[in-house]
Image 1: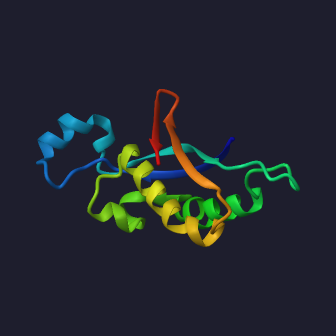
Image 2 (image 1 turned 90 degrees about the vertical axis):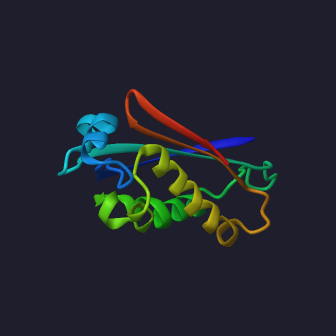
Length: 139
């Protein structure tokens, strides 16, 4: 069985690659290359799978899931400038594709401490940047 839980956070970023010159960055990223950045109200879906526990009728403890996502993602990304405040984006362009990868990395790293041998598995990260831009990372 799979459960998907939804979270929200707002962050700003500037899409600018140090591997490209200013003209190339403008061509690749357009208005998203604004030197002052721009923001998004991200919608994050975290999907987990596991066996249904006969005693609780659940596949995962929601409070634990909320705590893991809150501590490692929402609290870290909320109202932040991704370029300046998230160490991973010092060397990586904070495209939403890369944001999904970083979220997946953080959750995968935190998962064993939170869920141990419960059989609860992290399956997918889905992040909506805009109504037209939605990215999924299968783990």
